[in-house]
Image 1 (cartoon, helix red, strand yellow):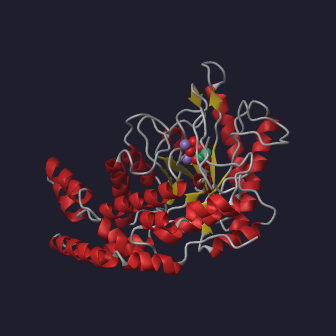
Image 2 (tube, rainbow, N blue to C red):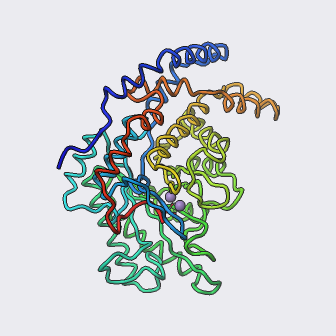
Image 3 (cartoon, protein in one colour):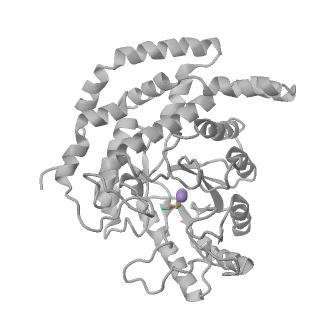
Length: 432
Ligand code: RM4
Ligand code: MN
Ligand code: MN
């Protein structure tokens, strides 16, 4: 087999050369404007350079809806090819240094080989995700009526065993967290006992927590509905928080931005979880109606900014136990997933950078003086600042592309992969 096509450093450098002068001009103007606000642009660039968000392996395949999936050309056909695509995203954007695998979708015979392939792209592994929301070929017992909360203890045991296997795989990959999202719940009132189901979940989870290595955490992911449409067992942050309290310090609550009741104040939930040392991290995406899995920052960028505002607030006051894990969790149905992931990481960095611009002394003074509008405008001033040149400079200094999307399109990567990767039947791709 010939060597697969990769975007070379020379190509990126040549692409950057054409954009550098204009970018620096814009950056210098922004730097001067920020200086008047006593904000050191260079310090913000340095912080942005440290920002990292994990890519979910399933995100580089085209997603679908429950109606159809329209596969894209040159999709990765296995985890190694998925890592190659993650390498492109990180190579150009320099904001996605880790990958979050999903088991059994990403199962391989040799995990050392997987780790090596990731390292080749400068990638490491973040939280490992278990999957008891589907039946796998050859699986002994079905998850049709639940997994960790199933009425039959044998099914619960099987689901626990799967999670233990995930921990073992994660250990070999260098992960330090297990994310557990279960699809358990009911579609009819009365279908299951709401209390018993939660008790069973807690008991099963306790077995998983007991098996975690000393430096590991388990991230509990709640979701309001789907596929269970009457009641999910871990439905909201209150349930997740109660479970995490009961399961002890290794258990924390994951916030997937699409998994809440409509109009709920997510940034306030974040503040509460930070306060009680229970914020595990995020699954970033955006939504209009429900768990839409749209690209981060594409629908409600102000909400995203407000979430980051809470995170920076926690960081600044050195909140005890504050170490959130960031991951993107999206379904790319109509875009090239690589493009969506590159852009989403930029939108996350944008919200992060904007939140860094908030004058926290002025904000606090306005809050203490009951100056409602003044306090609000402190946030708005940061949010309406165009930090694009600052992000471009951060990327350039980290060895990435000034304009990652344009560079990706100009590279011809997808066209090359279309030739190299003829579609195979039954390819596991994005979320369907
Ligand atoms: C769920 C949830 C999980 C993800 C699956 C594929 O809705 O967001 O995080 O693992 O989708
Ligand atoms: Mn999620
Ligand atoms: Mn989801």
